[in-house]
Length: 381
Picture 1 (cartoon, one colour):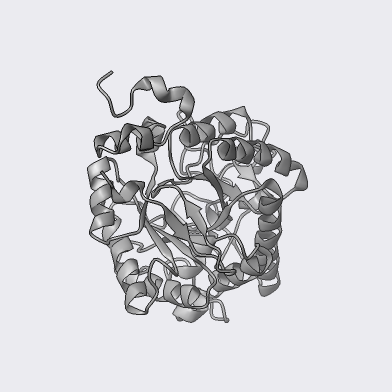
Picture 2 (tube, rainbow, N blue to C red):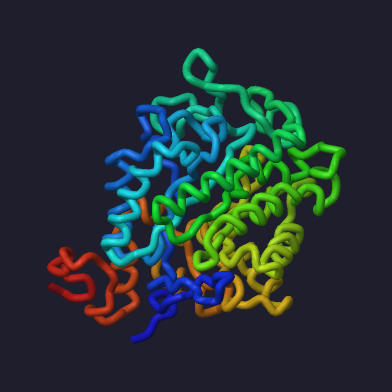
C-alpha cells in the first residue's frame, strides 16, 4: 500500500538534477550540547545519535545547529564548522549516514544575542548567559541590548561586522561541502541572529538592515545569496524560519511567507522548514499536537499561489508531529510536502520504520538498516 510519507521527494537544485530523498520523514536538527572539549568538533555521541536515525529509516538526517563562528554557538558545548580541523569528524558522521543509504544535512547557524548561554541540560542554569570566567563570551545582535530577559546585553553589529558574518556562513558552507553533506540549511529561526534581524521585537536599526520587511530580511537574503553562490549547484539549499513570534507586534507569518516567496522565486532556496517562536518567553505559544502545521500550510499555499510548487521548493512542517497518521494526514491534505521529526525521534530513533509499519507499508519496503530485519517491523513476529 502506497503511503505519501514513504514516497520519495526531490529537493530541487539549480542545475536541474534535483536530490531525491527516499522518504518524506526528515530528522529535525536538535542540539545535543555534547562537545565537552568546547572546540566544536563532533564526538562519538554525535555519531551514535545521528547514525541511529539513519539506521532507523529517516530519509534525511539534519545535524544540529552548527556554529559558523565560535562566538555564534548557542552554548560552549555546540558543534562548529568555523575551522578546518572540525571537518574530519563531520565527514565521519556523513560517511556513516551515507552507508545507511540516507542523506545528510547540516544546519548552519549563528546565535547572535542568544549565544554563550548555558546548555539545555539537567543541572545547568538554562536561559542565562555564561560569564567569561566560565568560558562564555560577549555577544552580538541586530541591535544593542539583551535579546531576552535574563541574557547579557548584546552589541549591535556594524555593517562591516555583518559582512564578516555573511563571509563566515560562506566559509562554513565550503567546509560542509568538504565534509560531504548533501544539504545545507540556514538557521533563521528560534530567536537566533538572522531571526533577530527579521523580527521587529529585536531589530531597532535605522540603516538598510532595519525598518521595513525588506530591510529586516536583508541579512537573510545576503546570507542565502552568498552561500548559494558557493554551495554546489547540484545540491539543495534550505532555510529554517520561525513563522511567527506569537505576539501582535512581532514577526508575522504573512511577512515570513513573502520573504520565502522571493527567495524561492529567485532560485536561492529549494527547501523551507517552518517552525516558530524563540524571541518571547513562550507564554503566548498555543503549543499542542501539530501546532505549527498551519504556519507551514500558509507558506505552502503562498508559494503555490505564486506558481512555486513542490517541483520548485519543498516545504516541511515541524513541531509536535508525533504519530504516523498525523504525519500522513499533513502530507495527503497538502499542508506540507514533508515532515521534520524532532522530539519523537529522540524518544525513538526508529520512528520512521515504526511509522511505515503503522501505515501498513509492505515489510520489504519499510526503511531500516538490514541488521534490524529480525526486529519484525510490519509483522507480528
